Length: 395
Ligand SMILES: *Cc1c(COP(=O)(O)O)cnc(C)c1O
Image 1 (spheres, helix red, strand yellow):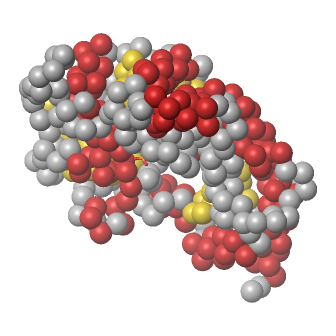
Image 2 (image 1 turned 90 degrees about the vertical axis):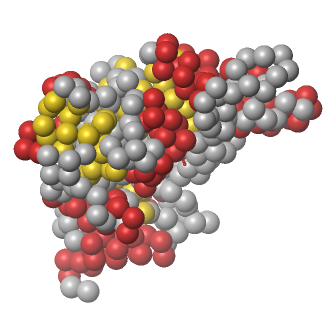
Image 3 (image 1 turned 45 degrees about the horizontal axis):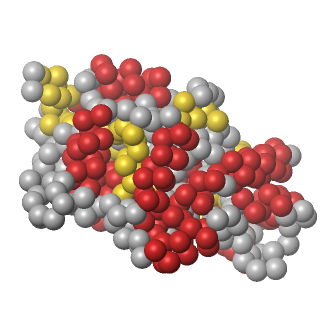
């Protein structure tokens, strides 16, 4: 290792040590915390026998989500991927359509498109937000798309372009002003993948409430967890009713008969999971405060060291800092991997960003724009341990 590399490594480990102290056990990327009423609420489910797809915690959880996000409706489902799948169907995505998604995202964003029988069409990211770049999208569509009476068509593939799915990466909101302008210019419905953005706001309004629909995830590694879970947010009464109906096997209300009027899904969140979620949401303010404190410590630690740029929240966004992240200025995968290795060896379980989705075998042949920014981010970004409890560590 040459001098500059060993200096970079020393600075890296010093920054982690300064923020996280010396770990007595490996520090994971994001660990759940059950310090509230989780035990009592889950016990109530067990005591009453209401563990499954009916029970009072589901409605209560949805009410809490409505209060928190300001969305008119929240529909709780089994996970974020299912939420995205349903939202895409309700946005009018049909088999054979294309759906615009960021190349830099968790695989679920593209999988949900595939589950709807559609084809993901990958677009580039904005270095300031890490999310879909509205200007790059606009240029791409201007070059490639035909606006017709029956929708927007990809001139190269002959397929309809049915929707756009921005993703609020690590809790940082995309530039929603510009994105909404581009989407409306091309008459594209927006389904926000806000899986990582619970508690994040853009100009004071909660992420996931700008598009036609937004989705949240409550997987074990997210800001709050229900074990597994997700939700659809929408302000549209009809879409909300449709989402509820489709997620509960499209069963018609009746005291005893089983009548279903279309092919539905078994996507409703069980009461047991919702009980966990109610207790978790009660603690969200504390989770957010501590995650933001922790992010501030990383910001300070990396500001004083050369070769790194802390990935701060973009303008207009109050981020939940789901995952704090830093860019290595060198933009070199080998350097990135060496630093991640070194961190792991000291008990700090850092991770790179996701492999770009069009590099995965199942999405290799999908249409894509040029992806210079997504490639640079992928080569240089490292996610840092971000559990709320880490804000209590003193080095
Ligand atoms: C977590 C996540 C999802 C949904 O994940 P589930 O595990 O299905 O709840 C979707 N998109 C992104 C970007 C995510 O991070």
